[in-house]
Length: 392
Image (cartoon, rainbow, N blue to C red; front, side, top):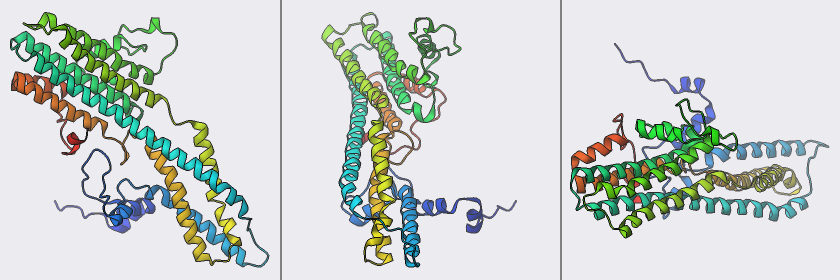
């Protein structure tokens, strides 16, 4: 059969929004590598014109609209007895207030962005440290039970990291972490048993609840329960290892769990403490009022209409762009260009775990762990950046 001809540009314009096509054409790019937006800081031109991760597509409509407003009132002003000019003294007083609110919001957003990245780094680091310390300290035990214990600890460490990432991503995909594919039937039943929701899985902890809990709240409870199970498994080394670890070495492994949970609790604080709404409301109210009254204030200026439109375009881009930068940084998790690939970075931590088990217990036990973390054999490593492992 002959292959159908590709859609022409005219057909695409008829079926899609023309502005979106324009933006997609600007942003057309080959595959990008890295866990978030990267750029060549030494090239001014490339930084200015790069569309990947840029706020241009979101800010451009505001710029165009404000220029159209300016052109329209300039036209009205040219007509007899029709003038919408206002004094620019009010804008002179507002300049400082608007700049303060916008810059303060950007600074706080950058602080939150870096804070969340620090919590992620703590969780990734401690999961790797726990596994490496475990295999080094217990590697002289080479019997079957010792290998089973190491494999179980490795599995639960990976699960702890995976459910923590699931909590972070819940607001985007609404997938309950106790339904993740990486959990085996026993782990899933254990998680459902100790949450304050009726999941339809039989026994739960509802009878002891102090109030009605949401799924979001109960998802945040799962990593805490998983950390408890991991601590119990580490403690069970006294029964599983032929030559048990001394107490100081066991406490070293426990300390990694403690540090991991410090990172998780920090991330939980980040997720449950949004940017203060009164500040956002004030900044945005002042911003829109200021930006969209500038065309009226400029009418009293003697410059020509083209100069007014250029100034208004640049001013709108500056103020609205900073606001959208704040919006991007407020929540660095999701599918936006500037968001962290937190799950992709977690997968690199899983791979480091496999390498540690491979070195100590061999391919058979590595395959066993890998299968437990990918029960449907979908291939966790497909489609991710080859540089992500160097960035976590």
